[in-house]
Length: 240
Image (cartoon, rainbow, N blue to C red):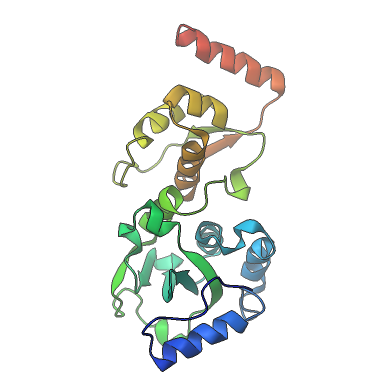
């Protein structure tokens, strides 16, 4: 594993030792992880998205195991503890209030089990910043470095908003509302959603990731003729 930063300005000895240890680790994912989690994460080890936070968050949320993620943020190490069963996270960086430029700087250095001493009461344990894991997933999907569809929802598929808890509680980027409105219609592709909502495809993909990670995305696979007929119907309703 390589890193573009080789030092921590003003860091203490312990932080520098941790930095050196993480840099010398040959893989981002600890061999002590459960086999199912490790197998899922290893899909990204040799891919360009391997250092992106969002696919790692998605895998952790699926397997429901508490894990510790070491992140590189500019010239510092950030520790992110995730407790999916409690729907909770804690971190020494305010991840929820990073803007798009800041969130894009987060890179995964290493993922490991949380030490037993950190599992006693995650909600009460001290951390500079903590909160809902659902909110973290939503925020990183919209603002993080990962702008491609997550592998679980990629491919020749169509999307629609599924019934469930309202997403209005989530912080919305200015372009989200129109795309969410289009998702409430009949199933549509990324291209159709982007065209109807006026958003670009990257933003559309980000929102689809966010909605999927809230358990609110329906995915359908249809024959080309069915997709063409559906698109004709949508165009007719818009008067095109």
